[in-house]
Length: 566
Image (cartoon, rainbow, N blue to C red; front, top):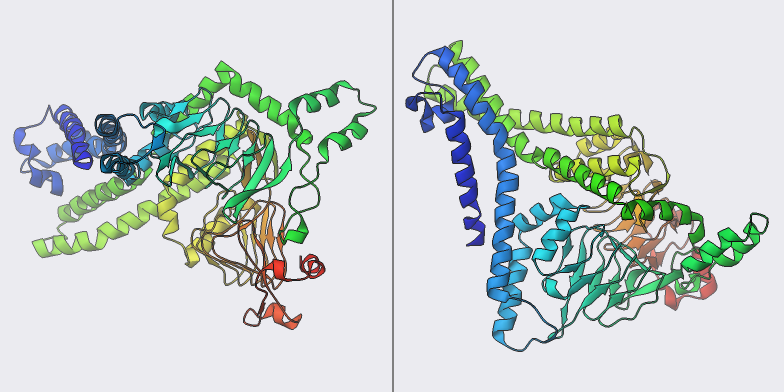
C-alpha cells in the first residue's frame, strides 16, 4: 500500500508539468501515440516545435520528479505508518504478537529499496538527521550523519559531534527485550559496524569498520575498537585525554619531544602473540590533534556548518537523478534518430520501425551510460586531479570536493558494478588513475583509485572494499593499498588503507586487514581482524596457490612460529 500510494503525488506532479508545457499546443498533438513516436498529424515545423518545447523539457524534468517527489512521498508515508500502527517503541520485554508485528512492519518499511535510496541522498547533511527525528530517533544537533539501519528508532540516542560511517546497524531488541543504544559525544562509528541493545559507545571512543559491540558490552572512553572476535570487538589502543594533549602544548617547545613520548606512545591492547597483524605501537593520537581541533571548530561554527550542508544539498539535487537522466536521454536520442530516419525515407514500414527501435535503443543506452561515466571521471580529474596520501580535516576545501565526487560516484555505483570481472572494469580503474597489471579480475569497489596498486594475476572478489580513506574524529586519512602478484581477496573482504597483500597471499571471505598491516607472501588469513589460518610448507609452495598446509587457527601454533610467519 505504501509503495503504491507514493506514486499518487508523482502522477499529479507529472500531470501538472505536462499541462503547463503543452498549454500552447493543439489537443490533437497531445495523444499518447504522438508522445511515443514523437510525430504528429500536423506540419513538420509544429512537430519540431513540440519536441523542443514540450517533450524535451518534460523528459528532462522526469528524473527529478521521480527521485525527489516519489522519495519524499514514500518517506512521509513510512513516517505516518510508523506512528499510526507502531507508535512509540519503549524499553522492556516484547511479549505480545502485536508488538512483534509492529516491529516487523516497521522493519519492512525502512528496509525497502525506495526508503534506503531516498535517505542515502542526504548523507552528511542535517536533513538526514531531521528525517531520523521524524521516525522517533533522538539525534542531537551537529551530528555528521550517515544512513544507518534500525527498527526501534525511539530507542536510538545520538549525542553531539558524533561521526557516522556508512552501513551502520543499531539493534535495539535482543532475546525479546528492547533496550536503548547510546552514542556519546565525540564518538565515531565507522563503516558496516553493529551495536546491539543496551550497549553504549562512550565519549571520544572509535568503533572501527566491520566491528560488533554485543549486548550490554561496556566500552572504555577514548578507546579504539575493531573487529568481531568471539562475538565482540577487541580494543586496540586508548587515546590520551584531551587535557593531557593540551597540557603538552603549554609546557614549551624545549621539552615537547620528551613529553610527547610519554603522552603519545600507548601500549596496544592487541599483540602479535594473539595471531593478529598489529604493530607494536599505537598511532600517535596527539600528532593529529591540530587537525581534529580545526575540524571540530569548523563543525561547531554556524557559518561552516550551514555552508557545508548547503553544498551537500546542492550536489544531491544535481547528481541524484543521473541514473534516471541516462534512461530518459537514451529515449530522447532514440526519438530523434527515429524522426530523422523517417524524414529521409529510410523507415517505410512498421516492421522497419520496430527493427530500428530494437537496434538503436540499446545502443543509445550504452552510449549515454559510457558518456555519463566518462563525465563523472572527468569531474574527478577536474576537481581533485590525482589523489594523494595524507590527512585532511573535515570542512576543508578537499573535504567539500571529496563529498561531491563521492555523491557522483555513488549514484553510478550500480552501473559501474555491472562492469565487474570484465576488461572494462580494468580499463575504468586505469582511467581513474590506478596502477593495474595484467590478467586482473576485479569485482570490488573503490574511490581514491590513484592510491591503488594491483599487480599481475590478482583477483579481487565481489563487493571487496578497496577505498583508500578512513575517517577518525573528523579527520580524513588517505593511504595507498597494494595487491601484489597472484594475491586473491575473496568476496566481502577489505584491506584497510595502508595495507598490503603480498605475492600469492589469500584473504578469506568477510575478513578485514587493519590499517598498515600486511598479508605475508603465500599465507592465508581470515577473520575480523584477519589472522593466520594457512601457511606454505616451502618457499616453492608460496608461488603455487594449490599447495598449502592448513594450520587450524593461529592459536594452535607456537607463538614464535606465528611471529615468524607474520
